[in-house]
Amino acid sequence: MLSDPIDSQRCLAAGAVDALHPDAELAAAGEALARRLAAGAPGSFAAIKALCADAPGRTLEAHLALEHRLLRERAGSADAREGVAAFLQKRAPRFGAP
Image (tube, rainbow, N blue to C red):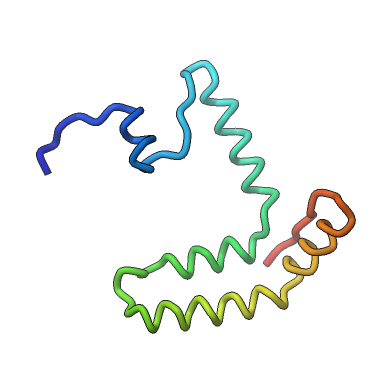
């Protein structure tokens, strides 16, 4: 509320950022993160976004009901089957479109 400057180390300690990178390494770190996200399960990412959207505006009961519904939907998805298969076969998952 006081608009005091906050340095990067305080932001990291407070959880406002996930990582810090020197300027010379920032582009490579951003590209690595983008590749990691692109390889993820798109349907699961969509469910996470749906759960986070308007979370403060939902009651706890409504939020838990939505979480339950989304978990059940995702558990039966192609993403889930691929994730389990990849784990059992000790390989990286290859997720498709949601």
